Image (tube, rainbow, N blue to C red; front, side, top):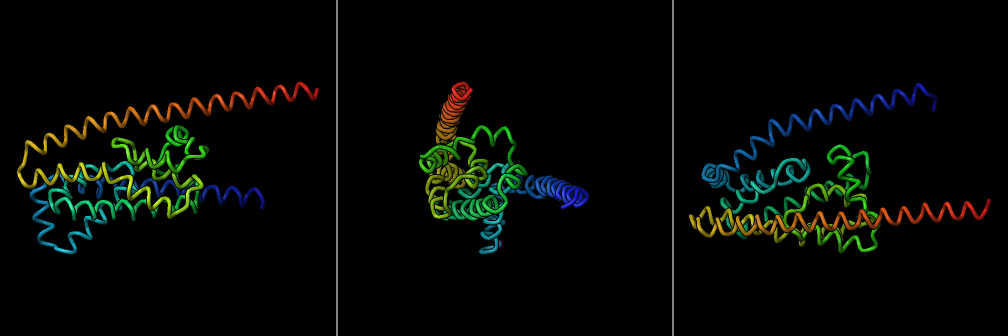
Length: 249
């Protein structure tokens, strides 16, 4: 391949990336923002769901899938709205099904396109901070713990997991089962609002906030521990390489 062909392909790739990023911004502004505002108005949202029946549920499912794929769109308002509009059981099923579909789509795309796809949605700094997931021998267990702990950036982690050797069945299990605590707490709080049990709703949201705060601290501690461990390992490899080079000389 000559240089002219390489430049043409690089220009086409950059143009495609620019168009995709522009499309993402437009979708977030014209779809994501109104979607969150709509769900954040629980009475109107429940009336809309009741009016549209099955189609309302399918529309909500699409919202959940969209929220997972576009990681900067927060998921908590959707989960609270699901508890308010659908109740605990149906709301939990819809939210978990939506996150499962979105997570599988991301997983398959990352497996196909690799880092090029991930960097469209996740900063390189965040990717580097979670690089240990690709290297640790117990990455299945670590991934499950990170998804199980409330408050961790699960949608960002969804993109990173695709870069690991994890297989699809294991990922389906983790993204479904490990998400249950964080999803259920938000839905219970939303359902309490819907049944006008305001004191219970406040207790649920306060408890969730405290647990999420502890989860964030635990997440930071886990990532810091593994980063320091990788740093020590890299330093040891460099020192070993220098020693080996000295012996050869």
